[in-house]
Image (cartoon, rainbow, N blue to C red; front, side, top):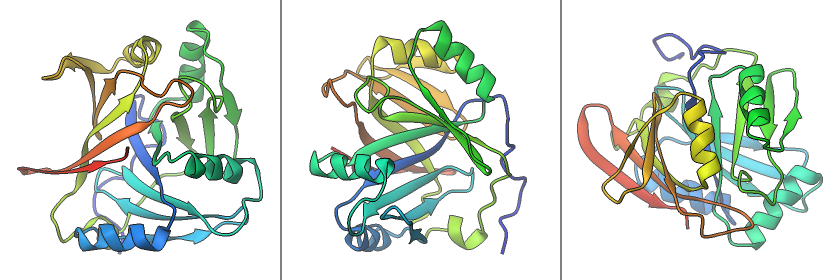
Amino acid sequence: MIATGMPLPTFSQELVIDHVISINTNLNEAIDDFSKKGFSIKQGRLHENGLINAHIKFHNYSSFELMSIEGEPKDAIAKEYDSLIKDGIKGAYLAFTGLTRNRIESELNTLGIRYYVTPGKLWTYISFPSKSEFAHIFFINYHIDQRFSVDEITHSNGFDKIKNLKIEGTQTLIKLLENFDLKSEKDTQGFVEFQTRTGSVTIMPLTHIERPRIKEVIFGKQNANDTLKISLN
């Protein structure tokens, strides 16, 4: 069954959280843990490069992805994930979407930020060097509309969105997000919190210099104040 409502536009001209990637040494254990917490899990698949994943999807077309490796990593991407696992990094990536490639590249060029573009048939990625202050984020442009089924976005615990992410970041990251016209305010601890339609992003001080991390995800409910905090440290 296809979810009711309009699909997320390919380019909405509004930067939003697309998905968060958590790396797990044992995917089955991670799936079992989140299932016990009341989330519906969409099984992914074993990719040719050795990556294997599963997804927790939400009504606003954001998602939380569980990622792991099965067997030996077979390409540069899988080897990067393998390296992150060995380094004990769980909160690996935050993916943004909603803006055109030209808009993203223009702002990156303005700030002198080095990046890579990986074009594809279904989507295009804009990512950053693995040893940089932007290593934990990337941008994805979809070339097709995203649709989630009702079963995928219905969770027995009632949580239906990513409410907040806490990520490490620098003043340059803050400036970049400001240039994308995201509204921000200081949270109760004095950190800058950016608002997007699919959740907020709080920028915390950079404590892992070589490779910043996603530190925490907080799930929420549309019509209630209940939250579920998951540490990704």
